[in-house]
Length: 372
Image (cartoon, rainbow, N blue to C red):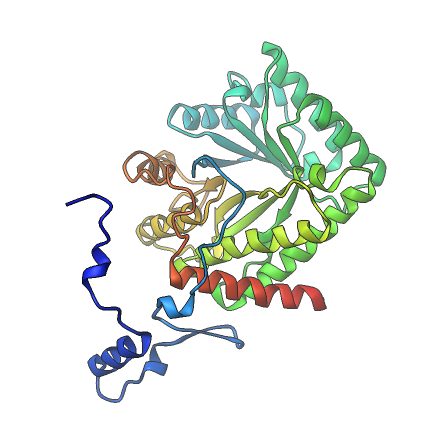
């Protein structure tokens, strides 16, 4: 038998109506197909069954990616530079590729990054200390990271571009372009709009409004649309609704590409997307959280995020301990090294159910974005 033989040709096609008829026959007495539907808010009813008749278009195509690789992240809320440095080094030795330092007070940056080669990873920062004087922080980080000279540094700052003065934005962009071209400066904290599956359309439309306003602000500061796009990244919260979260991120990509087209971008490219487990999805049972983290991580990875941060299972009590942090990292190691989910680009492409759901979310969010 040839490997390219079409095995489906041996079977008769089955219409959606026939499938639904057989499903209905198998339901318990008193249960209808309508009982299997579920609501996303008050305006969107989702069918539990997907069929080719629901999506007779080609699979959605995004700007080309060579693989589906993502950076394994771990977050550190900084209170003591020495202790945080030790925690980060332990994480890096055990597979972390994208440490995220949340810094709300002045610390010794040299001590925090002692022994860390930032050219080997992607280093992310956020917090009030960075926001207070982002130019000074970016210059200090550059000087610290270049002690080995000539290194290309990847990472981001979690800045709100709408909160900064025009002169500060211009200075930041000029310094970034010259010294840290692979560094992303402005964050769209989409997780702040998270409200579960019932609020997913609001979540998308509000994030798109903030991102569009940020893009406009950067263009007004003198950079091209394409350059401004490279300076923006989205931080997305991932909840436990498996298919909805996959569709949400795919819809976000479609929506952002629409914004870029409206700005007549000549180099359409996807934004950097960072996924975090939604704190609202965590329970008081750490073992439930461990199990749930697997499907949440799969949603993010299948949707094609660039960085993924899995909360330690007991993060509701503290920042996690050595065991729960190791388990959180290992979830991602298994997805890469055993499931090879980093090798297949957009594995959800062509799925009738996910394609239809992604398209529906994008259209409804776009309509709401336009009337905001």
